[in-house]
Length: 138
Image (cartoon, rainbow, N blue to C red; front, side):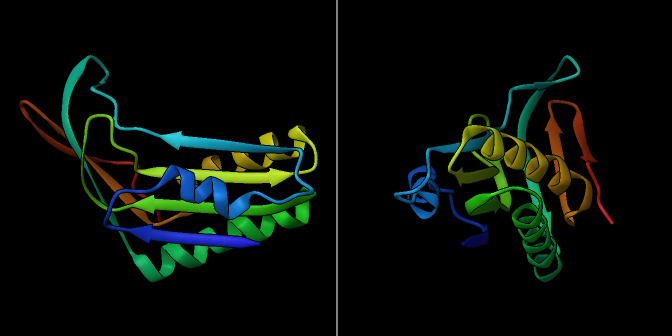
């Protein structure tokens, strides 16, 4: 029912879909985070993600367990990548299946919003003129 992963290799969208698909699910909502080419008007060269892996996995599992308590979902996949990612690469995929779309939409939004607030994964943005750590978590 819950599939949590932190990986240093590229994430696989189809794998996430396959992990949450069930015969009784009427919908799957997917959030795909991608590395964009600019932030606040500055050209981004790449992003780097680091995680306190054991704690991050535990926090990601808590998010999934909260979702199961709050919404009638069937399966949840939360995958996050670490390392240096180039423009267009995928640092995070969240997939949620449910019988009805509203539960899947609401749960997926909750997952990404909560992940960004509570999971110890840090992002460094590299620009042409320097680097800055952003989105630090507890």
